Image (tube, rainbow, N blue to C red; front, side):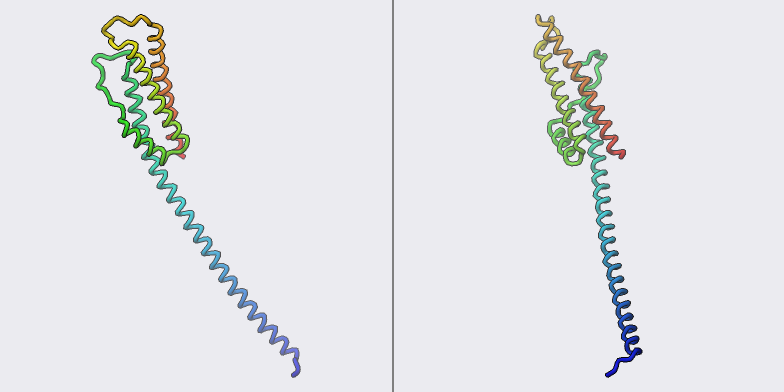
Length: 186
């Protein structure tokens, strides 16, 4: 059997046709795989955006409730042993209960950023420091209708500590509000 030039050209043409068809097949499969990969990446991106949106929504609610509690604490602190008393005194607002504080701490821990969690804990700690100072003044001078105790220096220091703790708490609440607002705006 003799192979002629036309046989070689026909074989090359068949080979070229098969090669082009194979390349086109691979290209289509590659495009499909590429499309699948892009689709998977797109779906993952959408899921990430949805997760972030849900977290932001939960965080906004948690931060709102946290700030309501912080402002309430700040108001109670302002009413406790005020520097100037109004007549008649305004109605007393109770401190949040221990249960309310625990629930808020859990909510802030679950949804808050590390900065907000730390600032909320600072507000709680500062609130305790304030009421410890109030307790000391009440222990030193329990009956205000009686003359002041002999150790006025210690009483004066304790009353100054109340004023200082009130200011530090106010600054902590202001910082908590600023950071929460900044986080929700971004």
